[in-house]
Figure 1 (cartoon, rainbow, N blue to C red):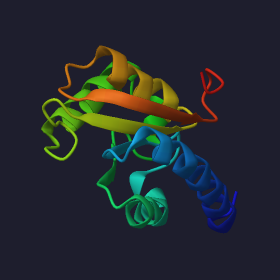
Figure 2: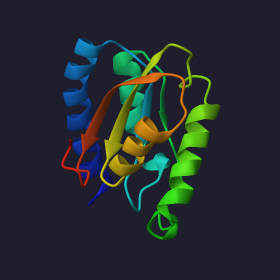
Figure 3: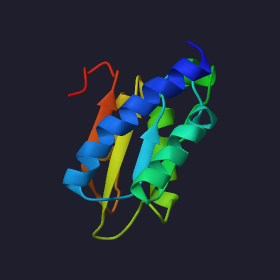
Length: 135
């Protein structure tokens, strides 16, 4: 898939999320990418969200590109928890955060939301193309 096609898909995702974001309030956003991708692939998507929602948006990088196929899930999930916990813009006492997951990043995002010792509660997980079919 070309970068242009990926960006168009992500733009549709962002517009879909925008409607839900208004209903749920503006909170910082953590994004988890899919297999074979890297956070740098999502730079323009993150910029669009930051401008649209006027909030902090970051991508949690646990295993970029090829390493995402070979690094075990436990290692990636522990790193995802640590990165999330160490980010002062996400780890807000008594705050809320939204998580956007793309493809296999849905598993990691769900793990961080449910299993990690994080201070904020997760307001919403937007899951697109994950193996749990967006549930």
